[in-house]
Image 1 (cartoon, rainbow, N blue to C red):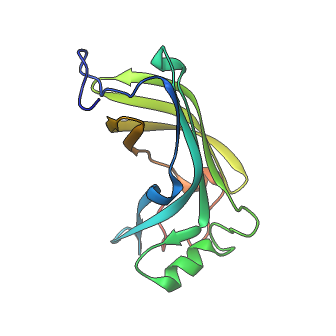
Image 2: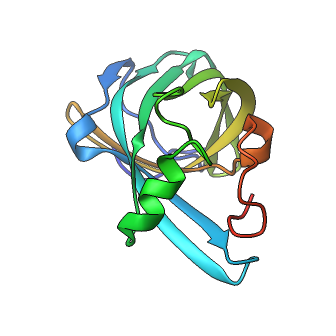
Length: 163
């Protein structure tokens, strides 16, 4: 199943539990630095996850775990700083997780509402799923969310690192 269904919303695969393939999955980060003048692009490794597609779709569940120590940009020095106590403090907070609370249709997209736990804080987030490609027992999902690091208590290096 690929594309959109009769109501214009991206098709989802058949109901069932789909394990996230950690080796083929990542979380991509884009942020600002240098007082908003520069852009940083990086990735985090996904360590585990599952998507339970249910009928009705609104009762589907998404779970994901990310390793903050795997923050990787194009600068090793930056990566070490981001994972240090100054920002992510990965020694004290070794996991970032997402657990969904609801799934809703929104135009031609899906919205997954849930909670992100990072840096000792849990905050609500809304994820927009804008692409789903399914083939047999495989599914590829592209989704976007916006998080404010200050909401998670990650407030170090103000000005040098965006929110």
